[in-house]
Length: 231
Image 1 (cartoon, one colour):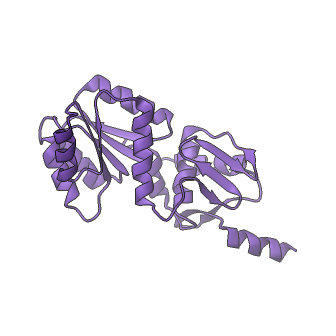
Image 2 (spheres, one colour):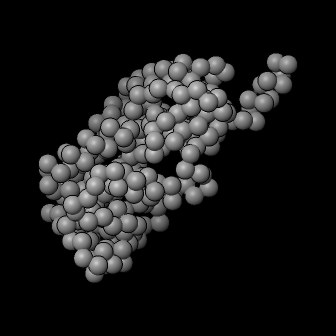
Image 3 (cartoon, helix red, strand yellow):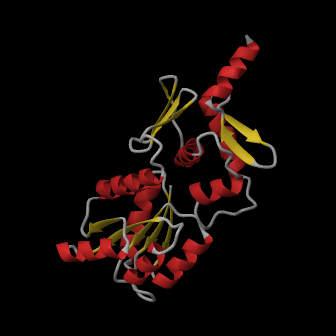
């Protein structure tokens, strides 16, 4: 998951971004509305964590602009204005969810995960393919019932691949979803992470390379066909 935090209180933005990165969530931050729209235009975000009272372009205007777009990230309004009327107004502006300050961090993470699930409604909360299961909430990965210990980056990459449901994901898309805006597009970080992820998941290899295109999970049907060919 990749989140854009739009918050002008620097200490709060830093605290949230640090906490989310510990949850294997990629984060970018900005403190004004105009830059927020620019970042949404040039990056692929799953959720925008949007404060209402921000400089540049007010958070309400940012919300209105994003809400009218056909393709957009989910919007979670995070603001000190927590009265019922404020929450209703925020939702009417186009926000998908609303969380008033102060808040408990686990609730913020749960709401972000829930918003992401709404964008993938055909998928269950726990993702699974080829006897690999990934639980985004517990940050646990198992293969054949065996727990697999992954780094935060490996977990993020695996989650993106599982959500593609066997579809090919380019290295550029993985950089967008699992890294942040500071990622070097010419780095070999994706290749290295995929390599270590393969080894940790062990054989039979669960991630395939589609030459010149990207990476994909080996589906259950493909694995069955491989086993049949070997047999």
